[in-house]
Length: 303
Image 1 (cartoon, rainbow, N blue to C red):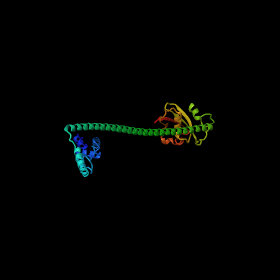
Image 2: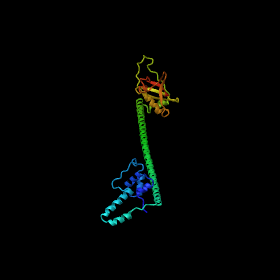
Image 3: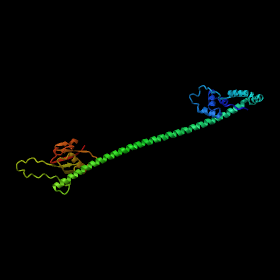
Image 4: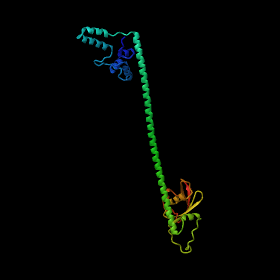
């Protein structure tokens, strides 16, 4: 019994002749398994169905085998005529029966099914690996986004902390200035403690009558200080003495530091008689310019 050639086997299995010839040529006619592997790997190539032109001397199957067998005896005849005729008779192919052909086709089909199963398993493994790589890449991108968000949040937190620190330092500078002013007033008037504390603990006293009230009209006195009484939201009062050239903002800071207004409560100041609400521009003006010298009563009002 003679085995089918690789090309014949592929044709028996139903492969297109053009594809079968390409598979045999590209695998060097090394066997049916290599040819089937090549066909399954290249079945989706765009040029798989283009006409195949075999190179010179390439052995594809039965026709080439028969041609080579006819040529070889002719060369051998020049050396040994008798032996050549016997070799040709012995090397002649014995045709396969139909049962043998079917059996070989079944073996090849089983081999093809095994190859296809192996290919599907390989493709599934490649898909799993691709999915793993995709998920890994997605996780890396998520980590990068999270890191960027964390960096932005850290920058924002640092900026807010810096702003709070600057605001705290500004308040501390105002407090220090108020404390220095108190010390200067205490030294000037000979008081032992801060004048604002003593003034707030005692009710406002009316100004003593001038000794020259019965004499000729006095000249206008220039005051360099102002006594300010502030009425809080709950009805309590604060009293303190400020320099005439200090801005109204100093009074507001004093109320923020020593008053009982809630933390973060925004408020403004106003004069009850005549009623006048002081604006942010007024906060920068000296007390003397606003007519709050030598004394005045202010009321705290919510904005």
